[in-house]
Amino acid sequence: MLEIGTGNGFSSTFFALKTDLKKIKTIEKNELYFQNSNKVSSKVEYVLADAFEYKPDSKYDIIFIDGPKSKQELLFEKYQNYINHNGMIIIDNIFLKRLLSKNNKQALKIINKNNNFIKYLNQKKDWNIKIVNVGDGLAVCKRKEKTMKLSVTCGNYSLALKMLELNVDNIIVGLKDYCCRFNNVFTIEEIKSLCKNKGNSKITVCLNDIYFENQMNGLTETLKLLNDIDIDYVMFHDFAIPQICYEENLNLNLHYSPETIVTSYGQFDFYLKNKITRVSLATELMTNEMKKIGLNKKAMEVYVKGFGLGFVMHSRWPMLSNFLKHADVKEHKFDNLSYWEIKEDLRKYPNIIYEDNSGTHMLTGYFLSCIKRLKELYDSNIDGLIIDSLFMKDNQVIEIVKLFNQALSNLNNENEIIKLFDKQKDYVDHIVSEGFFGKMGDILHTLKNDNEQEGE
Image (cartoon, one colour):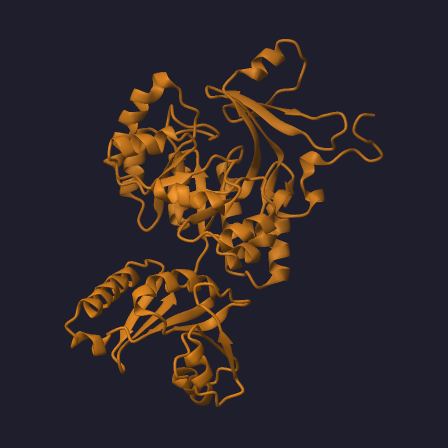
């Protein structure tokens, strides 16, 4: 346990003598209080420090806050990051009875700040807050049971309905004329119908294309239409979308998913100020980089692509058509999509390249999967996974979703996780690898042929 504000030492002494807590650390800024505090138990470590400057060296099951009443929110914001999974924060003297009888400006100022703090606590959607009428009142704050949400991109209505049957948390659909990298797209009417049947699932409409000036009026009208439909998020790439939402005062929840450039948590304050509350991390981040972001994400919801072809490049130009006029390369078909596999002479594995109305797209020639890293991502507060169904048949998507649901229910069973990772290979048409979730050797499209060096 960590106590903020030792005072006379009564609270830390009580916890040491009356509970099963094995280790208690208490910090106090006031040197006089620190010297005179009641030090009666060897279980308690006393630290002279300013709570706003002190940096804990571990996480705690309980953090007991009895610091300055005018700065409760700042203390909560800081120390919520040092609570273990299923831990709690307890705030002492939440009623401030001793101040209620005082009729002076300073007391009223503190009481108003305390009332605002109670409102702040009650607005914390990811916390259960209970006010206990003991003594001068305790606020017992415990994080709601953490889950990792599963999102699936769907290229047709029947697949989306199947995902609803499987209780997928979030269904992502591409809107016709405004999205790319989907097997197929939805119309506004199909999205309306899907929203009526969504039950407890969420519906995200993906608008991830590159937009130009001559498309702004159409994009604005489309966002206005979506604003009147019961969708839960708009997933976007182009910052024209939050700008339009701001100018038109649209109440759309925004999920920023540019595939490549969300690479640090230092960007999150800017996004939150612009009402972007959810992001997808770049697909080329390694697991340790994702973990660091998850542990420092504050109020941002952070998603990663948990399964799918890795994104490499998108150009507005028909680069492939021009190339194929002068090259004899084998064409592959997936439903109504044509694609080609290209490989540098020194590389072991090819990339996929294809063309649509949005331009030219290059992807990894293998599926990336994070199943082996789910526990690490979960423990690092990553909020959700996206299964990208591009170049997957519906029955393949269904089986992969089932495997991920099993994996999320067996996070601590390493043997089962390994089996589930291997099973993925039975359901898709391309190689499955950890890719950037694993080691350098798992990033297959960077591997060279044996005994060959760059430049030979």
